[in-house]
Image 1 (cartoon, rainbow, N blue to C red):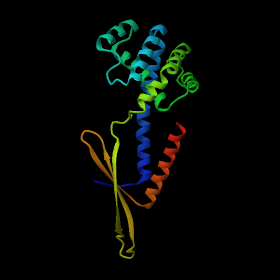
Image 2 (tube, rainbow, N blue to C red):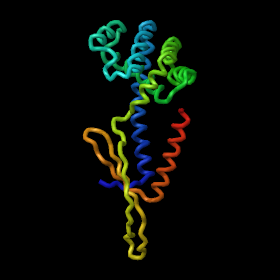
Image 3 (cartoon, rainbow, N blue to C red):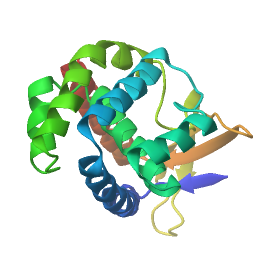
Image 4 (cartoon, one colour):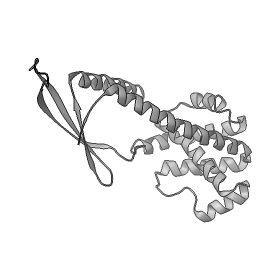
Length: 215
């Protein structure tokens, strides 16, 4: 299937989708942060270290077994849903910090404001980040936060004649075919004119510059 590109419309739709997702994540993040503040600091330190060790190992299994989670629920005085949100929130903090390669000072400032995490919990989270950051970043560099990735690119150049009876000028169009991973694997074919290609190139340049700044 061929999709003519309208970059402005696609950009608006994409931003709206991202905004919707961010709002949902923000809601659950705020709830998870409240749970963090309720947990005993000594027990929270052990939990954070265990999560960081799991992230550093690159294991795809759950951090805690079902039996361990039951014991944690009792120990932390949390129901199953609150415990799950607590684990997800701590994991999110470290995975986002790793993908953005956040420095400890920046992480500390962000946790204090706007996240408003209590000082004793900030110290625990920060100390674990200092200890495990390099290992977590190295592991997550090999992974993607998206299940679908581009694994192949093909293109072809077509000349399309104007539909106008007055103008018979042909205009070049590029058909860009992206091979996407997934189950099943799919192909996405995008139709672009010269201006579309120029816009795409400029955005790729900006992305490359930001990636280079993280090195």
